[in-house]
Amino acid sequence: MANVTAISEFIFVGFSDVQELQTVCGVFFLMMYMAALTSNLIIIILTTLDLQLQTPMYFFLKNLSLLDVFFVSVTIPNLVVNSLTHNNFISILGCAVQVFLLSSFTGGEVFILTVMSYDRYVAICSPLHYDAIMNGGTCVLMVSVSWATGVFFGAIYTAGTFSGPFCGSNVIPQFFCDVPSLLRISCSERLELIYTGLGIGLCLGISCFTCVVISYFYIFSTVLKIPTAKGQSKAFATCIPHLTVFTVFIVTACFVYLKPPSIVPSITDRLFSVLYTVLPPALNPLIYSLRNRDVKCALGRLQQNLCARYSLHLILQNICQWYSVSQVTSKFRSF
Image (cartoon, rainbow, N blue to C red):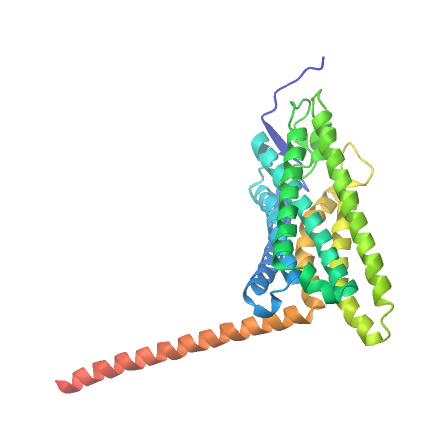
């Protein structure tokens, strides 16, 4: 039987042993985190307040942005703090929470992206039945199932990973608790739960990917039958942002999880892991705002409303000041 040493905490491997370079990396990723957080919060505010964005597509986009905010907030703040304080330790409980949240939000995002592809399929292939199919109750049900499935997948994944003790080195060659690194140092003799979680995740991932591919096969087939180039361009404009977001998410995930395993991950491997966690959340709002006229118009209306309220506040403030001065002047004259 292997000699099992109780491990109470893990140590992350930073980008460099030079503290100055770690500080620079921490500041850089803090800026990327703030950019991703701000852009997604803007999308959430626009799709919540603007009446013209109260459609199923933007309802799903709001949930995608919400998942992106949670997803990027699981790992990047901890990376920034570790880089600035030069403290790379994390407890087993903190690591388990990180794995659970990261797995849950990843699963939820995959399902939301799949639901968004179905929404585009109905909008283009069955436009006359769109309102009946994608009604409010259906949209809420789809989003609820996506979030619930993500949480279920995260619970199974986390339970399988932490079902047994860890032995050997407590060094995780990443900047966050990723399951492949944890499984390398796991001493669990009961692998059923681990394989169950991996199997469920693989089946769900393949099913979602297949649904997206089938949806876009029918979408492209329908769009190419439109007789006018203007109609085709308009139809493609509603699909390209989602297809781009889905592609970025899948490609970055493949770079991280489908690359050949290495005993000692290089700096490039860790850099790809950072890009996987911060790049999709940062690019998603940008992709949707660049090619989406509705989002641009909504942002313009929000700016106008804010400017109007600020101008009204200044006018009221000036009136109050004028009234106060006039009252003081009248009292002075009375004496």
